[in-house]
Length: 112
Length: 114
Image (tube, rainbow over all chains, first blue to last red; front, side):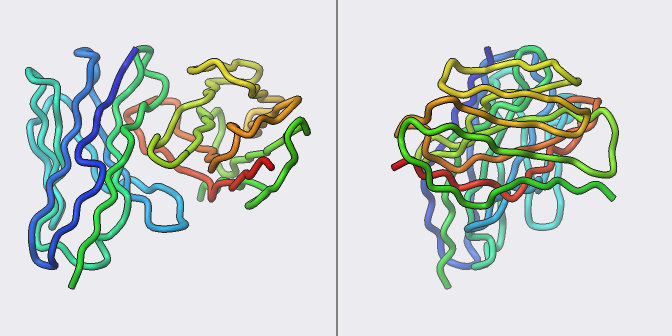
């Protein structure tokens, strides 16, 4: 089945710096790669996703890149702000394409 | 608009006691439903998913079971809880387009087995 690896597990940056979180997946047939943000005590929420027919997608300060050959995708946050502090999860579909398999999460801390 | 309800928010149960967590979705039909568990250092672990009434798929062997008695109701159960069942349980739903649509999570249940 699908296996999603996420790195790093924790990331600390200064306000204004960029943050990059990387994920790898095992199933070459996977075609959908979302990123979720979970603020402390709250539910995970989708922040951006990418499908296999594109290599990059941007939404203001966040972007996701996908390398299907290498089977990895990354989340990029530019000009980080304290409110970006949260746990970020990457995900990919299971082999049947019926459920999302999540990475173990990255705790991002942005200090001002 | 669609909403997802999950209860209770917190639960403290003794080892060996039964468990029943309920999740309901409003404002949509034929959703795909999911139970995830979040434990420290283990991310969001998929436990069960359902693509229709009475259809349950399990991703990992465990002490838990799931049922879908109605289209928009998903129940997580255990006959006898273990200490290792402690964690944060999240219910989620997606549309029938499977993974090309956003997954919406409930507020979660914090379960502590003592």
